[in-house]
Image 1 (tube, rainbow, N blue to C red):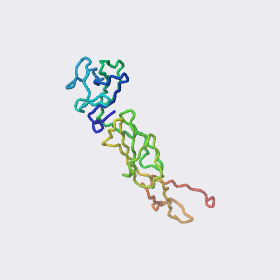
Image 2 (tube, helix red, strand yellow):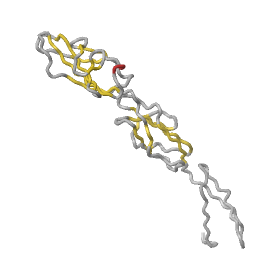
Image 3 (spheres, rainbow, N blue to C red):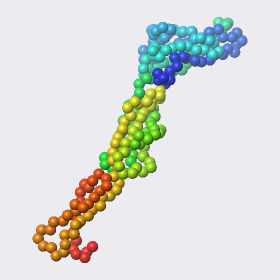
Image 4 (cartoon, rainbow, N blue to C red):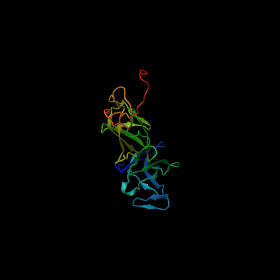
Length: 231
């Protein structure tokens, strides 16, 4: 597959003749797979036709990207003719795809927000089969990755951002990588209880307002009671 940047606009190849007469010409048949039409040198037509290449033992043919459609495959078949008039019977063929559309990237599995996991797992997909991926954490350096991806080394408490970008087989990269921001809080909170005093009666108010958490805050405080001296 080729993208717009990778397409040079020139088809190239080589030919040989073992009979001794020498080569006189190389011709190409270029078929568009989407509608089975053929390139005639200036446009696409119904019915097979050949166009002449420049050179023989090393040949080339110019085909501008403007004449190719995005996402369409093309088959190029070459035949050589020698100076004695012998025409190659079995053509040499190759098929390529012209692809200028970038894939989309989607994050699937992700940690909850907030999360106590310091080594979370991410999964992600591309809209195009065969795509490769690059990942980065907290605007760091992009690096090749595969799905599922386990973040390593362990993350510190705080806010983190994970980005992932897909690139298709033609080299088109997603210009808008998928991203996810969440908070890691793996530090347990500290509960404190104000001493209500001894030998109490009636309604006793217990105060745990001194409890603290360095992360996302305390979700709940549970109080347990036991007989004096029971621990």
